[in-house]
Length: 144
Image (tube, rainbow, N blue to C red):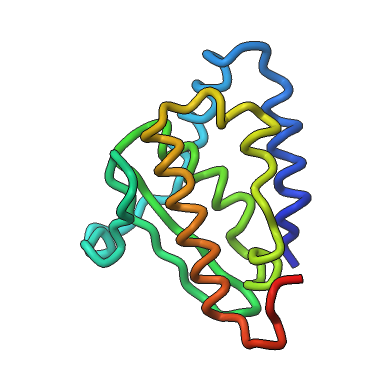
């Protein structure tokens, strides 16, 4: 089973390899370029995430045992942020997602180095992922 905490530790380790934020931004952009593209038919208004300055299409599929997250953006750095969130949460159960906090964001310094609009978009994506996970939990599976 996918472990969001281990994935976050891997991200923290990866980002620690870079000495400056120009290199970290380039790494984010490179991650975004590796995203699996969505079909044009999936880029609909009902998949468009509100709260992001750039356009972000977010699809969260699956059930309480495993959520699969796919997303794309028309912005390079935002695509990299999406790649990080997919790495942490896609493949995890709804309970794992609900119990997981995205500590990697502050640990690697993203919070301080994102523009306010990108930070809002990141939090909108996180919120949508957590909301979907919460919606799949039965009352006896509530977060710990």
